[in-house]
Image (cartoon, rainbow, N blue to C red):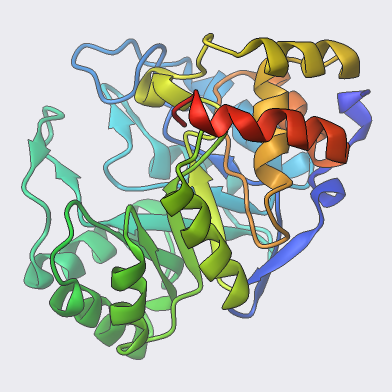
Length: 303
């Protein structure tokens, strides 16, 4: 693949409500710092480099950017970088953010927001991004309890015009069903990748049947999670990567996109070369034989 000539349009498109996005997007969790996200004392990434990465992603056709107000490290904030790099925003750019978790100025995690606190988190994202409304807001949760009150609070903000569309993050199928009795859900953002459990695969299928975007996180990082891309690739992944002349990380990302037309990728990086490599995956076709070879890995890897 000649990544320099491939744009995000190669990945095809999907709709988040009435907003059309290329299936290859960009996640900002790792943009602000070197090394693992959210760790104390993280070394901030060079600001000009971070801005260049964002601009390069958009130049390559990325029009779906994932962020959150709690994505920050010393001296750097994902939302501020997005605002600085991309405002005034292109008409087709969709910015998706998350609420629920929060961190204090020192970076320590706070208890998840109550229904009453969610409006403050929405307004914080609006201020940082310089927007009068948010395109998509995902309610991110931990646990299996009811989300009715929290999702209902966001539904009220949607009715008030502060939010255009709503989504969910880190949820189970019963959360999706509960939320849909309150307001439309345009996306589910959950952990997913090679090694996904049968339950995760079933949830992805359910979303596809309902025309809801499924947006995996850690599809490249795998067991590395916030630390970044895993190096624990199976022999099968490495062999297929060699056959295509690409990296193992690109194969993991390509496998994810092959899971359905409703699957949207949001790989993150602070490296200009990696942005182009990730975008180029949209044109990488895996054969049925290769997909079959990778499928048994569900029994051996954890995404």
